[in-house]
Length: 564
Image (cartoon, rainbow, N blue to C red; front, side):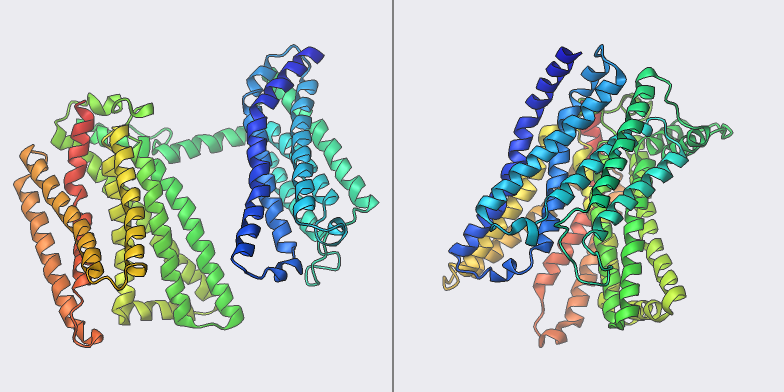
């Protein structure tokens, strides 16, 4: 038994040493580099010496995340080896718990020792940087985490509730150590661990170790099974994710309808559920927080309404990136070696396949935007019920009377479609080299333009041609966007992927959009003392081109992916 655990410990150390070195180096060299740079710049950092509490909590959060990540990475490669060892389950579970505890404690002591030599004085432990209490807490948290992990191999609603309550209670207890006189009093560093606190943590550690070893033994012997209620919930949740409702009556469908439904269940429905729940909850929580802050501090109603719109725009922006990745890899096999078999060999022509997949993409975007804006209205209604209808009225008054507020709403919807659809058109090609090249060109070009324009406007400000160079660089981007759109439509029309009617419709929309942009710029020229802002024309027309480009690039990408 000793030999087996010794060999496994060597394997654990081989996997952990590099990550541990990087984690400790980052936590030590990062603040040291910041301190040296600020001193070289001649900045005054005396204010940091008076209150290090915020930095202490930031260090605790970062160090715990880094060190636990190193340990989890190391143990992930040893877990299968541990399962096959001719050793008792209690010994294996204890080994996994105590190796993680030992490594985290060792890394914490090394990092704190380096901080003492580089940054702190001899009174650091007593005055502003407690060590023993946080160490005891992270040890307890690791053992409790192991216990809950192995218990959740046989999940039940009771275990989930107890686990959440236990974790919340531990963190509440930990934070309360820094407020011995109550949360309304001043924060005091937890520099002294009382006998009662020490005994309480040790009792929790022993209980977590005992229950964790029992749960691991049940899992290793194969008798850990979920509760019936949990299994029913899992069945319903899987049905919700895939769109396949259990015991649903069968309805005969056509080939194209069947393929569209299968693709929706395979990737689109999951994207709607994940993005809708995640960003819907974010929208609800942030808007309710804005309403509560407005009610408590009696702030500006219109600023709060603007904040709600900004939150919605940010949520739609981030959601578009997540949706693009979820849908982008949904039609390719693992590794992007080929298109998924059921799509590649479907008895449909390319035009019909493109139409069905594009319709699913459009449906996904509409559903997620409907969830985000629906949650926005719901949160405003909840705010109205809790603290009065002032914020709701200010929001709609701003929407109906200020054209810029309405434009922000349109930009939220348009930016979602531009990012999601154009990213999907790149990912649906299935060519890894093309995807990496497109990402490199976009981000590399963006960085190059930022650096070049910044240099031209600062270093070469007095150079007569600097403004013309900047304008030429920006016009080049505009020409690439519009030219790329025209080339994509010409290629899709030539290959028969879009009809003449769709081509003419997109051209008409683009021309009407350009006309509307010109009219709007001319009507608002009085705001700029009669000067026509043609720069806005190029910006909005480029956005319009990006808005229409996916209607041609997505059929081209699907054809290229299907006929490898």
